[in-house]
Length: 519
Image 1 (cartoon, rainbow, N blue to C red):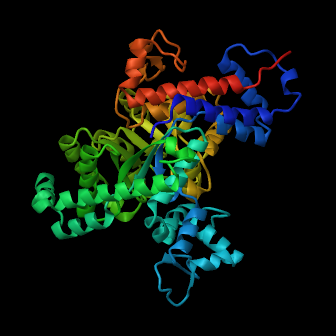
Image 2: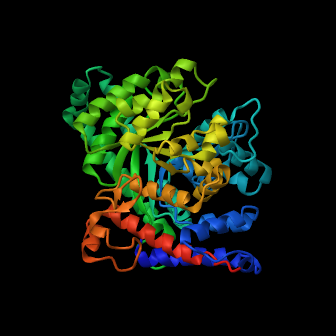
Image 3: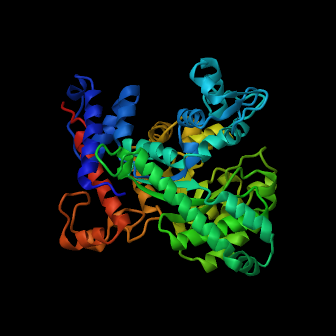
């Protein structure tokens, strides 16, 4: 599912055409001529800071690489979830707006009522997302996480339809890659964990789970579920016939979730399933721990879960690990719980990327931690909107500029854009306007989203810090239509380098579409 260079150029041409159509007729007559493309694009960006429509067009057309932190259930729009609830005949509790399978219990209404009762529909949308939310008796943190339990059944029944919408949204905003999180064979893994129980001897526990093909059956169930999800997604998007949707060109990979607020037996089992999937099925590239980091069981078992990952990393070194860590603020947990989560995720949990990392300032010796992250090239997945909604952290209070100043790689991400009522374009615009980023900074954020993606093959870049091309491509201008023979061979043999080269093509097209100013 890799977009061709021609398709990428066509999509970007459409985006830049829209961008140019929004430029006022007088815009080309009031500034200096271009110079370097980077300077010209930066000047243009600064000139439109107070023009909302042009800003949106600019950031939508900007090539934005990949989304590395995306939860499938929370990424789909609330409207799609509600439509699925209607299609499946689900019921919705009048008081709590929680969905349930039919028959409808007393105090609930058919989801179909949202088609004719606009007040009821708005009530459900507000309960299932952050739309119109104002903190009060309920915090942003509590409302955000509660949405998943309310729309749950609507997100379980048709994951392929969710993926089709999410992929289309990403492709339409000039992204080429998506890593989305889901829980493989959730019920089967839970049943196996309950049957086997927990053993603090991790090797003994793994052998018990493998015994009698127990884990093998769970893994086969997970692969079958992924097959069904992919088939539904491709059918929904018409990927195998005429009129294919934009999302069909996206490269999609899965990250296996483990529920950190569950019992140790279930967490270990889910992590083990994810590791086995990464070994057996190339669609699954990594494991992650999800659910609120401040949940009592998540706090109590944090170090135990890092030890599980330490053991499993030794058995499955090919499986990547990315971890939610530091999605905490003072007052949400006691001070001691703010001091070690990011560091422990990297040092013991072998995390190659960190999701959120918001509590950096409260970690023990944060400056040394920044050096550790930079030296190991541990990327930080930053969803600015959800950090503001869940934790109330934004602007100068957010560690985003501190990570960048310390040369820690950063990639912008959406997290749960359906719940947040946002998208990746909004994340880039928010970052640029809040932290006064120029075009080269935005371009490097997009480059990082592919450089730190869990894709096979060598990188296009020899230098992750400065993005110098690999030796085979050193004589080529990245993004040209005709790379030399050695560079072409590197691209042909590496899915990662191929996507990175395509992104450079996209940058050249994007830059060419920015209006040239005249004196």
